[in-house]
Image (cartoon, rainbow, N blue to C red):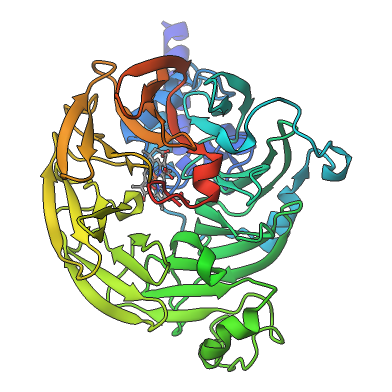
Length: 523
Ligand code: DHE
């Protein structure tokens, strides 16, 4: 009896002590997660854990990852260490926004810099034999790798590890030797294709949108959600040159929707998500004064009021603000980079902003949610048209770029994400990324605006994102699955030529098409 009493009271005691000491989510995080995911959730060996970084992971999936771990990563299973309640506390915690926008200072950026190889000590000749303009980089999300692919033989040249969760198009140096990757966690990696080596890396932000490279190859710009800023890097070894907090002229802070290079303008375009402004940042060291003379009086230094008479004499990378009528989430540039066609995610209209005139010049009626970022242009009946898939509805919208009127809505078997063509191809390809027909890809004849063929190359598996070879004769399509593939098609007969097994290949990028800003390819 005594033993029981002691035991029972002991148990009661320890239960009440446990109740009092029930760990908070913050304590659980610090005890179990912090060593890999960073003191303030900013990421370290493991990814950053803010809602912005987790936007594509459902809460129940996050709970499974904590319980069971993640295959092929260092993430261990916590189901034996933590209770279900603890795991659910942690899930709630990581999906709660940080109380203040997390900081990632210039010192943090600099401290993250890794120089894997001294570029000057590496050979200047490619260490393999292939047409250097017809290479592809294929990003494989399945195990965070990338494949360098020969675009003539369709044989992999090498496969290498990337940072966790790359997103968006990697960008090439103008000569095609280097490729720059951005990960969602802000890591920028410079890969030397000739030597098949990652030469330098730096963490430019905590949650990054994308990056762009200048036409002279000297600078890379990175747009961030966390913190709210852009970071301009010297591409030589990725060291930061300038960090600019993104805020409108009244000081309201904003995330960056995306950054782009505008080659004919020798400037970067920065679209802001939470304020009604687009920025243009000239970077050219040559001819800049002439090119920008007309604008000189418009320049303001980093949100300040000082007028810049001669941008060369002022700080490098002045900012030219363009006020917009709506927020910009997604956009497209005409091939001349004079007009920016933008849409906000909750608007039924697109706005055409003339970058020279610095104002809206037209409204486009756009139902659903067109994915302008995937838009492409071609010539149709003597005029230039622009076509974009739609993330919400099964349609491709074709717009006359002279008068910005919708010419046709091509009905598809579901909402699509990516669209591609090549100036030498009669066809445009669009996927059906969302919904029950995700295994399908439509092929549209560019001169009739009709779907002429629908492929379903791997039943049940998402087929998405194509890229053409340099000459436009072949098309590469991803089967977006861990047990996936890149399928090569003859771009004219539309027959399958080859299947290369890959682990969830997402985007693939042809060196020539990207460095020559081919009309059918994303920029
Ligand atoms: Fe992307 C490109 C934004 C979700 C795969 N995506 C881009 C670009 C932007 C963008 C601004 C252009 C970057 C560039 O090339 O420099 N993407 C967004 C979103 O806002 C969205 C809808 C929500 C988000 O989570 O950020 C989004 N994107 C996704 C995905 O879920 C995809 C399918 C899987 C993934 O990798 O996360 C995805 N996005 C891609 C790919 C590209 C891309 C493969 C490059 C396309 C190209 O051909 O250039």
